[in-house]
Length: 184
Image (cartoon, rainbow, N blue to C red; front, side, top):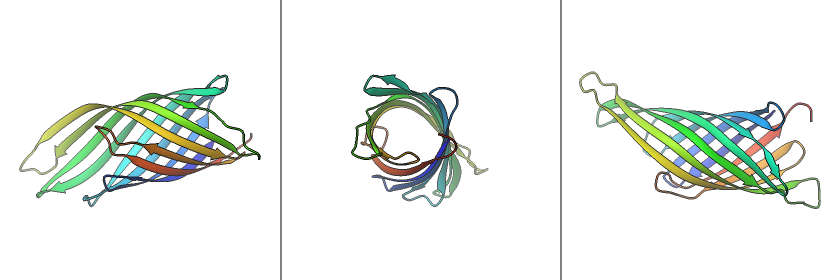
């Protein structure tokens, strides 16, 4: 089992704090979960998000490939022009992580990775004001290409990830600190 905490900053005046955990099930099958709280630029409330992910590591010689499938749900309460509402976001994530571990002169491992993902996102807004009820759903496919670097020892790792901006998302730069627990 491994657990970690992270911080990220996006270009659209968004700050993110996260906590995550991952558990190896059998062989190289892993299940993970994460909680993220995001501060959006001009919104007083935090956006709360939960994610779950299933992945399986495959070694292809010097390259590791890890197919990933997951989902997420986020909720945010807003107040715009005197109208209160709830914004919910549902995501389905599919992709693969490609990585290559490079040898270092000590027991540390340096692993650059790339993670192409397709995110199917549905954003819903529902007013909660009794006098004016409005509902809207927006669906979009969001191709993403995460770039990253992991520096790991036997039990600890630092992971840096970067998402360049795209049509459906702002760029994001994040750093996470991860610790493994249990028998090795």
